[in-house]
Length: 134
Image (cartoon, rainbow, N blue to C red; front, side):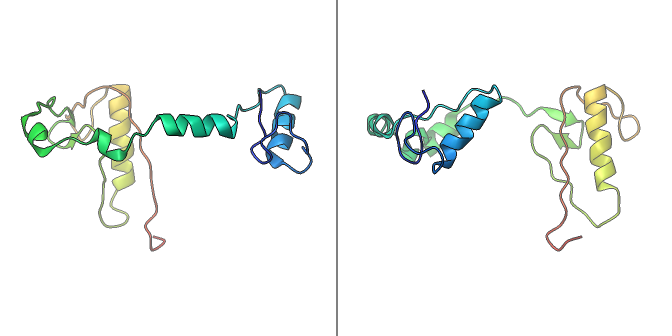
């Protein structure tokens, strides 16, 4: 069942006007399944049922003080803990090559930075230009 997001009808009364219906027809023509969109009455009923707020997921300072956390896993001994790491420094000093070398060492179970053996696992690197266009 595909409900038009513009006119709210199933089937749409004016598919030439409603872009979402034209897209659903194109998906059907290419053998893809159309995206299901709930009728607005069902969406409104669900939003009334779940009156959850952002405060429902809060944790108090007292609970946080007594919580026991798992130890931090070190990926490259003495250098990089598990999680997000930002390499920053002057241009053209090898930050991208270092990130690539560390990711390759983690993924391929090999040494990095001489004799340092990182934990084997999945790795991801992303590169970004500076805001000033550098």
